[in-house]
Image (cartoon, rainbow, N blue to C red; front, side, top):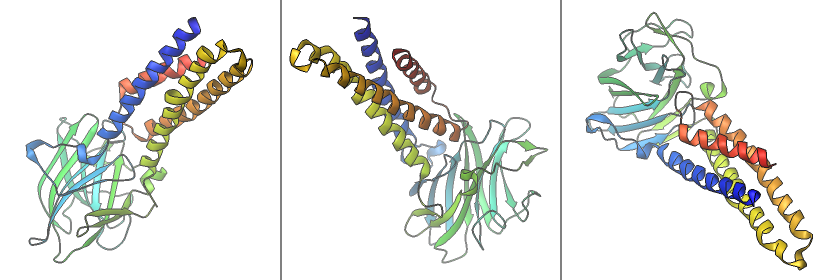
Length: 294
């Protein structure tokens, strides 16, 4: 009966992991995020790169944009940035708000006119900015600001970015992974939509793949394999077919689980600074026990 006990443990851990995964997925949407000082915004977008989110309200009468940008920095001593490029897509020429921790540990957000890829100096930007504030909480940095835009503005070229360090009060150069290079797009102030040029939300797609693979593996195929061994072998009619069905289910479940494990590792690597410890530990335990069983 040891095999039955082990299988039951695997199934229980699988169910718990799936529940935590669902909770994690729900918590990783902009609609569930809350802010201090009762800040509320008309629109929010799950940006497709760098685990970032944008909340915003556009006042067409005043031609002003109030926003909150949330992202995990590449390290706890890193920085995050959100910018408008008035002339083109991409970073060069963008008018940026960059938040980071100062030497005294307090959060600061400052304006930068990014005219060079290497030289970054604080300066005034093309837009009047008010109500600037920055926060750091649970591995995420947040930028709050209100920008005065030109009249009749309808669509903006937006750019966002994260970096790993600040040297001498200046943000250091960011990474050049695919997410860093693709973190740009258009913000439609009238329709309330954020579109990117990279062709889809790859992070959300990977999250869905991770969830489906693990649901099929630990939540469906593994319990079916266990039930085949427990119940079908009592009938002579299914001898020896029950054994091959059992093995097929268990091996297939493990193979699919390995794929789910791999996508989980990839997602973890894409979410530096944000950790879900319980989900990770349950996943490690589940995968270790499944490997031991194999």
